[in-house]
Image 1: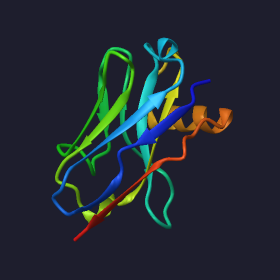
Image 2 (image 1 turned 45 degrees about the horizontal axis):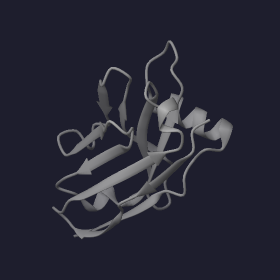
Image 3 (image 1 turned 135 degrees about the horizontal axis):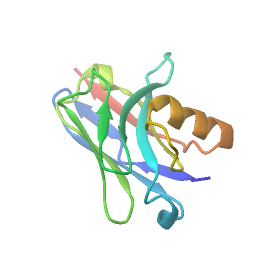
Length: 130
């Protein structure tokens, strides 16, 4: 079970930039993990944002493609570079991780793993003003 701490949120104007970070515990154990970001806008359900798999392959929701970039450094800290932010991006952002499996690194897989093991972080809030 991987516990995480999200940081880097804040308030910006539309078109601005933020960089979110997610620090998992026991980084040596997350080296081959499926990891990703999900977000929950006010009054809405949690939705997938981006994932990164063991081989470095990435997936993005259609709403953030071309604007957000997910990455992981050598210390296994997860990042989300958010450029050209829009008011619709306002949400609490969460990261999640799952152990290696013989299956794709999907939003659903991450959400299930975090839910089953109660490993969601507190999230970090992003507010984008028009």
